[in-house]
Image 1: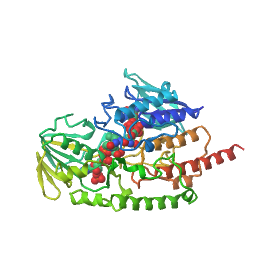
Image 2: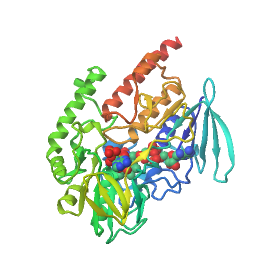
Image 3: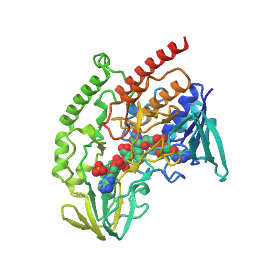
Length: 447
Ligand SMILES: Cc1cc2nc3c(=O)[nH]c(=O)nc-3n(C[C@H](O)[C@H](O)[C@H](O)COP(=O)(O)OP(=O)(O)OC[C@H]3O[C@@H](n4cnc5c(N)ncnc54)[C@H](O)[C@@H]3O)c2cc1C
Ligand SMILES: NC(=O)c1ccc[n+]([C@@H]2O[C@H](COP(=O)([O-])OP(=O)(O)OC[C@H]3O[C@@H](n4cnc5c(N)ncnc54)[C@H](OP(=O)(O)O)[C@@H]3O)[C@@H](O)[C@H]2O)c1
């Protein structure tokens, strides 16, 4: 039985631990926090959660379900953060793998042994360090914990912080009756700008240096994604697409999906641009889309004012790239996160450009005992994709799957973030097909 070290007990680490344990592997999951759930634990003692009081999922229950576990039928489509956390707690109990999770234990360093295996240095809550040996390493330490803060020209006066610290309009600082500038038009920036405007900020400006598609979460009270097909890796793919070569079906579906998105959201996006948001890319899949309901109304009413990127700051004065100026008492950087694995050597995991190239989105192309699970760019939810990653690792490590040759591995190795968003159902299908091919290779090798 191979031993596997899973780093982190956020959603990805939990689905990985369960999937690997069910495949008969000897799994140990180490979590530096005293809590499971990663982002979904508000004020997580790890200090790494970006959850705020009003946070709820922007992915529906159907999109977010796992292969064998769903949110209860009576729950709302978009769950608040504490429900998501409760759901992951119940997932652990349902599959009975709590004994595999070691809370309060940080992975300090994982060193690759030759020709395979990992020496893992651990530090427990008392500060004691130990080193343990594992056959494989599954990194599930998340991709949204190392805040990206832009280097602004000039000196910032007033309060400035990254959105990871934002909990609500009164926390970490009160924004009531104050002038607020939010930098970044991702999900976080758009949502918190609207929230602070509604909660009584004197003014809120949203600064965006480039455009992206901004989608509604609900249309006429129903989840906008409800009408979109194939949003989970566990959804059926129609036969017409299933029998096309992988590349063709992906291109065809992306073309159709893009056309549909433009038809449904094009006018709304046009209005957002008229209201000052930057022009989005021609293809909505080229950049992570933002999902935000209140932004359009907030811009229409003037509660939020759209601004371009920041050129420089002079004390409390912000000078934008179009020459306009305004004042900020509170400056919030909703500018995203760096991809970082500080416990792994750069030789294996070089994330200086905030990306990594992996086989099928999860396995290191040269170290076949190193997996990054849960970091991806799907058009749906993250956790089911993490489960597909984990299913792949489980099949390989338990000997049910044999890898193809080096050329085939290279062909299917690509960046996990700097790429077009992919359809979850087509990814699920491609992964199942590859697992079947690998199972046949493993059978042949065993004969
Ligand atoms: C504000 C916000 C909202 C989001 N909303 C959605 C949504 O609606 N739907 C969706 O699908 N996705 C959403 N996401 C994406 C989100 O990243 C995933 O939902 C999910 O939290 C990712 O799980 P993860 O386990 O990869 O990472 P995390 O949740 O970040 O968990 C990583 C865990 O690893 C631990 N860890 C890190 N380093 C170490 C170490 N060296 N040793 C031991 N433990 C370590 C951390 O303490 C943490 O518990 C959202 C993200 C953010 C930031
Ligand atoms: N469930 C929810 O409702 C919810 C809420 C919040 C977040 N989330 C999720 O959390 C994850 C992180 O979202 P996020 O919004 O925090 O980060 P993000 O998606 O990475 O967005 C960061 C934004 O900051 C901008 N930016 C980056 N560097 C900049 C700079 N130097 N100057 C100006 N702008 C800069 C980016 O624009 P450029 O493109 O120009 O770089 C982008 O608009 C996403 O997966 C998101 O879906 C979900």
